Length: 232
Ligand code: ADP
Ligand code: ADP
Image 1: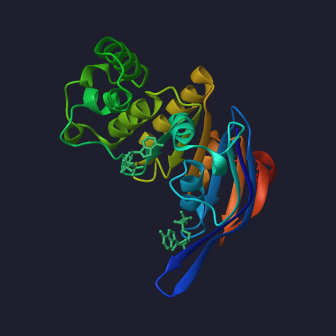
Image 2 (image 1 turned 180 degrees about the vertical axis):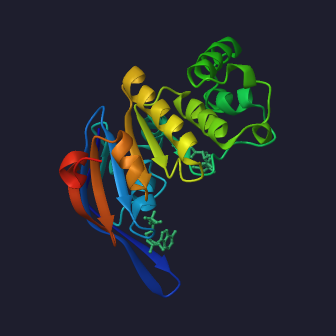
């Protein structure tokens, strides 16, 4: 579902070059819950931004759902990017909009009909357990509830892939557990491939089936979670 081949990424910073990725190969299968773990600065966020094409690789190929991202037309790229949902550490909700509007946003942008938007948003809010919060604003919700909204929004356009960038790092352990259970349901119910970026081993051990360990721009270990880390 996601293939990275020989990826190098160099950032130009004033007069210096930062080598964020130094030859990364990674293959994530359909249906995987794939974890990428490493310390801050290892290159994890860069990897995610390459997969949803917010950044281009300096060298190498990014292939998503069989399509090589490097030679797509802008229109085709937008279609591919619709297959990718994303959730964030700080949720990135629109504070001045209701929960309904936040979840509806991708559908509004895609110019779906009012009726379709309404039924899809209510279905998603029900799925994440927030059907009674449709008229509330983000500031009225707890962190865990905000991340549920983030998940509902990410699912709105029926993605095949969900990217999670430190999605539980701002949450307490109990809330983290409930969000991880929800991600497991997302994976099972919709068959969505999930890529999780984290610095927390416990997150990987709780829900991932495969893991890549990153250090200084390289994958230093990769395999099933049991092979790499043993039993929790
Ligand atoms: P992680 O997500 O594992 O913390 P990042 O991918 O954010 O790692 O960063 C990897 C390296 O690339 C770090 O040295 C970081 O400072 C550098 N880096 C990331 N983004 C940029 C950028 N936009 N410009 C310059 N350097 C960057
Ligand atoms: P723009 O170029 O329109 O500013 P960005 O890519 O910077 O778009 O994203 C704007 C906001 O959209 C981000 O802050 C984030 O909340 C959300 N976003 C970005 N990428 C995704 C994605 N793949 N799936 C869902 N939401 C996303």
